[in-house]
Amino acid sequence: MITTEISFSGVLAIVAYFQFLLIWAQAEIGLKQHSLFASQFDPVFKLQVNYSAKGDVVTHLHIHLKNTSDNPAYNMFVSRIFNLNLDQPINPKYWKEKIDDTSSKDLGAGDYYNCTINDVQFAEDKGIEFTYTNKFGVFKDIFVKFGNKNALIIPPRIQEPGLLLNTFIEVRLFFQTLKYEWYLMNNNRG
Image 1 (cartoon, rainbow, N blue to C red):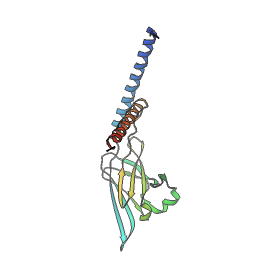
Image 2 (image 1 turned 180 degrees about the vertical axis):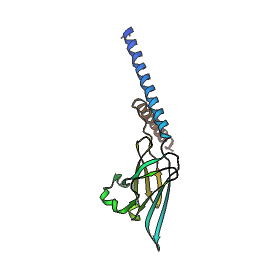
Image 3 (image 1 turned 30 degrees about the vertical axis):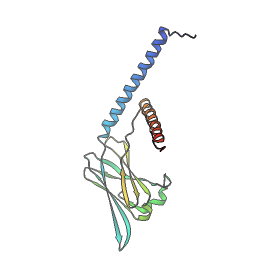
Image 4 (image 1 turned 90 degrees about the vertical axis):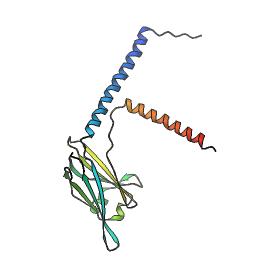
């Protein structure tokens, strides 16, 4: 029979370790609260897409991004074009002549950013990244995705700082995914 005894210094080390984890978690919660607070000062955009045609042939695609918030967006411009089928950016020398945009524009409340794509076929299965700076000088981007004559605007992701709490969240999601897959396997046998 094996017996183990924990000395007072061992218990003290364990308590100190858990106190360290608690302080670390509190610091990360503070960072997350700060990033959520700062996100309220980011602009919000509304997307409008229009097509112009000559006869029955669609020739141009017009993208209008309207700043619907009171927060300004500074120096907005088209930064990258993505091929969504290959999930990679396209070299600017292949798309610069196909896009007419109002280069580097500041958008206040209710202002529009206009961009025109001269080749409608080029826009299919593409995504356009628009980059701007918020009122604090932080670079942000929004993504407009095209496909099947539809457009979708994807707002910027709020980057949650910290390693400890994000690790806990990922471990929890991993076990939830395993639980869900086990549930699907056991209920689809019939």
